[in-house]
Length: 392
Ligand code: ACO
Image (cartoon, rainbow, N blue to C red; front, top):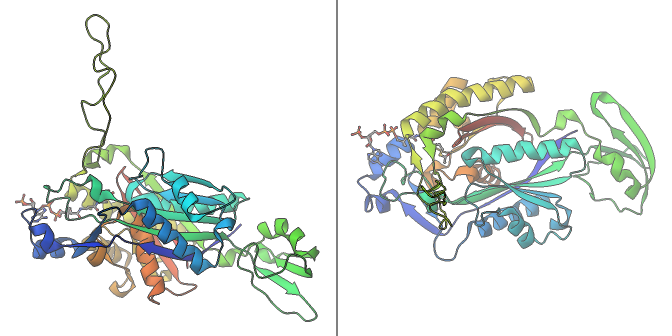
């Protein structure tokens, strides 16, 4: 079964913070930050702006581009490590979008790899059957967990949201009085459900299925129809390594919960006080080394699974963490600089939002065109990393 990326959208907070602004907070400079990271500005949530609202805006733009009604969404995957409710932000996004059919909505927590995991999960839900329109949102507000006195981390992060609509792939040939060919973008395409049609559905491996009847009765058959040559996600490779957590983490604050038994058997520190998470702690150079070693391997593996090589890539779209990481991975894969998508300078590292944010800009800016092959890769806390080869 196939799937296709049919819409994208993004949103960033209104407050823009420059490198010079940060040089007023910590001992750093625009020269150091831009030369070591490629970052010049980032957007930071302020006032009453929320990450959930950014996610809703990004999702609405993706639905508009795809021309899909919120009522036709049957799954919302909210990839975030900074939910605005401990139990997850996805249901609030689903509610704000006005999806009337109560589609499943839940969070995926995998830091900067979150969006990639969401994308692959969406494809699996579609290929597993029953799901037609899956909204994958990457949204994070890591600036809420930044130590603004630590120059090694506070210069890196920005807040944002990006979204992609992944849709079941249908390729229908409709026999009318003449052999005209129609392409229907997903269930509930442009055909009237009361119309009578004779259709020929092309299946993978050049098999063809012929049927007729009211369009409504075709829906089940349509769900299983796809053409693998048009598939929007055709190879992925993903990993995690809990041992690397020591190099990048934001753990539960210590001393909040103390369940040790006292000498008389009483429980010390009970009841516990309210908990919170510490600020991000990172050994930047360790994470840097991990990224430039593991990301090319994951992309090569995903390409191999897809039966492709580096020369088949139109665009390299990595999690936007550091321009030097993008350059190193591109060099290793022999992808020329003009094929590397980068918007780090304007937004910094926006965690799970960075890939869909950069994709949205590249699509709306006319850079990425329908049919282009994109090698995408996420990496970050966990540690987690992975690659997916997608077609726009
Ligand atoms: N301004 C000026 N000097 C600085 C700054 C700063 N903002 N930050 C560090 N320095 C100094 C250090 O103190 C050190 O000085 P010293 O030599 O006197 O000790 C020197 O610069 C070099 O420090 P490094 O940490 O080795 O610098 P590096 O070149 O590695 O750059 C950076 C640091 C930008 C953090 C880089 O390591 C990096 O980008 N790492 C990867 C981050 C990443 O990809 N994270 C993954 C995703 S995040 C997530 O998943 C949540």
